[in-house]
Amino acid sequence: MKVAVLIPAHDEEPRIAATVAAAAAIPDVTTVTVVDDASADRTAEAAESAGARVVQLPRNVGKGAALDAGLAHVPQEADVILLLDGDLEDSAAQGALLLAPIARREADMTVATFPPVAGKAGFGLVKGLARRGIHTLGGPAAHSFTANAPLSGQRALTRPCLELVTPFAFGYGVEVALTVRALQAGMRVVEVPTTMSHDATGRDVSGFAHRGTQFVHVAWALVRLAFERRP
Image (cartoon, rainbow, N blue to C red; front, side, top):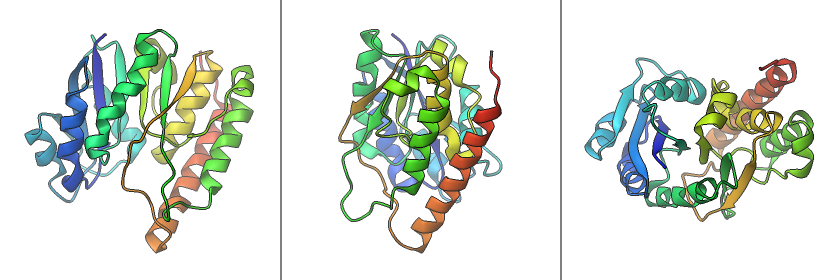
């Protein structure tokens, strides 16, 4: 199994090098590609120094478009694509847990669940919207699937599954669209418990603004999915 890691990153200079190093050390990983989404800091340089192949975007385009740009640089011989966020640091090594069910041919897409984050969680509005959307739009397979981590960006996908769920949705609608499309296509989606950690969004002004943007992006993705007709 040949695994290609794809990491979208924006202003992750303090964390990206550790994330890249941990991801590169996962067994079967052959390449790590970081998409620098027009960072204002030295994210690109830090990622490159850690051994990543770096794709630098001239302007900020958001997570979905950044992933699409990076996908064009992922080697075609990769059997599995491992999507990781840039702020995982050493916990990115647990991407190996996402690969295990795929290696055992038990899943086409795996999704990491995170332990609860004390004191920094939101009110669950975005997660609730995403869960309802997955249940409503995912087709018959969604009725037996419980999305505990509908917004998790840490995912592994087989190449055939990847081709069925891309191009990526806009912005923060990426994750919910991946799950809905995979379920609609009859792909096996499996959530995998991890103890990964990242820079959680707090209950301050910037945190609420971020969650508001997430809500809009997820809602827009669900509207588009409701009218989408894919082969």
